[in-house]
Length: 139
Image (cartoon, rainbow, N blue to C red; front, top):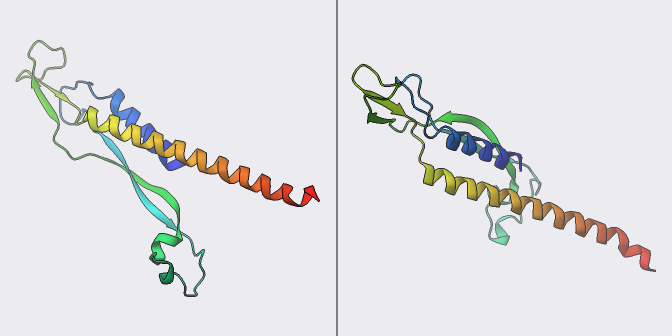
């Protein structure tokens, strides 16, 4: 859930800065993306039986993801000829971020749905635990 929150934050930052003009390539905002890696947990122990279920060891041992870094995109910046713009350089060009709004919106929807799914899983697990605790009380 925290990884999806970071993903949502970087996406919203990208969208907020999508039309930010700058007078040079050094000052312009660049799209940011989080880099994730799987957190491995030895839940199955060192014994066998993992391959028998049809899953690889890595599929069964993943305990979630962590954010390794947030990197800036190296996609080319957008350069527009706008000589009347206050931020135009000496040649009349204004530089805009390399943010693809459609891609960012799709990323935001994906992150939002992943977050919602994680919340539902947590609520289901909580409900199941509460039911387990009440099993012995009915006798």
